[in-house]
Length: 237
Image 1 (cartoon, helix red, strand yellow):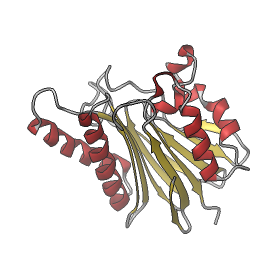
Image 2 (cartoon, rainbow, N blue to C red; image 1 turned 135 degrees about the vertical axis):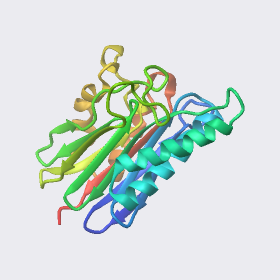
Image 3 (spheres, helix red, strand yellow; image 1 turned 180 degrees about the horizontal axis):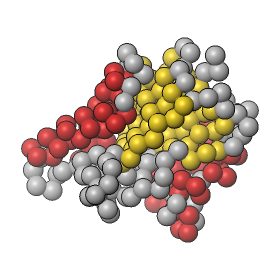
């Protein structure tokens, strides 16, 4: 388990597991930039080196740009440009695509953007769990990933938040975290995960323990997917 502490903003606990996959196609990047603390979680589509390459490139670039601009949107646009260049130069059949959820955090502010189905939630001071992303589309289905944009709608998906004192903890993840859910819950895994998070990410639990517990939950999921979790404990001062 890795962690980063940024005084006055947050402490982040983060890790990825390969689980039952041959390749690790998840990647998380955490960067204390000049304008924001940036956290990017990416989930490459597939179980191959190209998916792994796409997720690593995208997470690193998205976090670097989001941290230096306080714009998760700018982070994803920069990652898209680089990933498109990478895929244009790749041999046929070796292109890589990936989902992403990117958070840029400042005192009192959260800028969140995402593509694909990687989710995010907030744990409030009263213990309530609030979905921050909306159920989006899998990168292997409707085009919505770091390289491909939706037709006729906003890309990437974006929501800015004012972080009032009601917000205590943010959880970002790849969809491997929700693979244990019944198939009926997978279509809306963001809302279907709320009860599990209310129990496993309760505020009386240490952030590092929460991250480890969520990864343990992911180990029980169907297909034993790559899984990444970032638990962001917001400073209360």
